[in-house]
Image 1: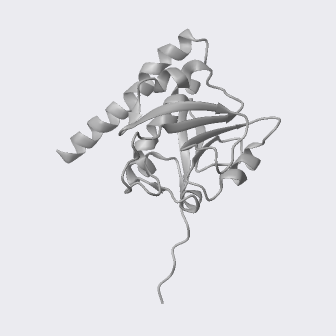
Image 2: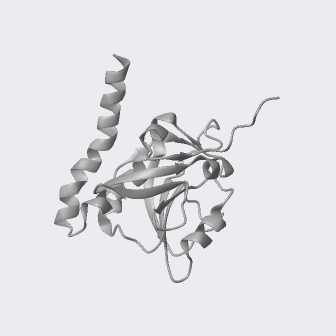
Length: 188
C-alpha cells in the first residue's frame, strides 16, 4: 500500500513534465528543454536547505530559480512556474548574467556565457545554499542533466551538495543515473 502511495506521488510530481511536451512543441522548442525546465523547480521539494527549521519570514521570501548566463528555456520555465509555490514561498524565475554568494538563488541553472563560464559560476557559489544544475557537457553541478536514449535523466553529486549545506532526499537519489558520494570513513 505504501508503495502505491509513493508511486502516485511520483506520478503527480512528474505529470507536468509530460504535460509540457506539447507546450514545447507549440513553442518550437525541443521536448527535452521543457522537461529540464520542469525538473528545475520539481527538484525543490526533494532538497533540504540550511535553516529549513527556522520560522518562516513574514512575508515569506520567494523561492528563486535562477537561469544564469545562456537561457535555453525561453518562456517555458517562466510559464511552468507561474502560480507554483514551495510551501508558503512563491516560486519565481530570475534571469541573470552572472552569479555570486549574494544572488539569492535557491536553484541555479548554470548555462555559461561569454562573461561567466559554468566553471566560474560553480566556484562563485561553492559553499552557499544553492542547488546548482548543469548540463552533462559542462562541469558538473550538484545535479547534471544527461540525455540517455532520448530521455532527460540526471546525475547527483552528494559531495557538492554537502559542501553547499544541502541534503538531497533518498527519493530523488533513487531516480538518478548515478550518485557521487563522499567516501565512507572506515571505523577502527
